Image (cartoon, rainbow, N blue to C red; front, top):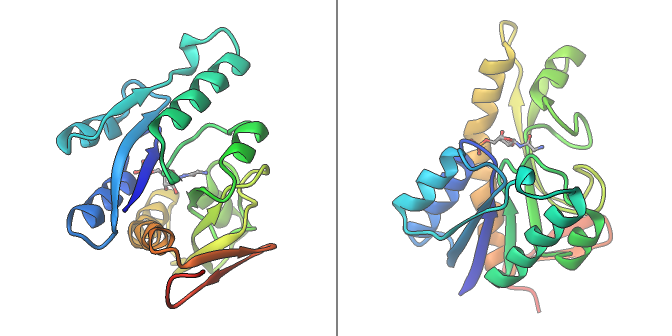
Length: 205
Ligand code: GAR
């Protein structure tokens, strides 16, 4: 059984979606810890409800980015997870950290990458005027939202959409896409082949 660690900075609804699919046996894994940079993240309460250990690594507790990153990396190594899921973790990881966990870290982003990376992705999509928005789950590499794509879900943009209404509809798809990608990983069905991720029907060798 795989061990999953989740990194989240805020509300944690994607974290909850993973918890639910682990609890009902859809994802064959154990969630071994929540790591957050935000001591008041609602995700902490969600972890508490399910007896999931929490590590708070708050940026303001460290004199500089280097020491913050060292503490984060130490915590990640200590929790001994097979997979690290960035579920609304809003801090960019250092390239060294990404390399340490290469092929073992995935992220959910509320846009159809490579369009609209970074912050406020839904607003970027509306401002550009695209008709199809969506979400992407991808492996994390050293760039911002640039790693190999595991899966994407399209969401139609409506005439009267606001940033909030679009974000809310995309979120419904995020809550399906992220647990599904986690499940595929935990079933050893993902293979990274250069920029492409091959999704196997059965566990890959
Ligand atoms: C989600 O929409 C996620 O895609 C986004 O933050 C939100 C977290 O919501 N992540 C990013 O924008 C990362 N670039 P949640 O805390 O309710 O899961």
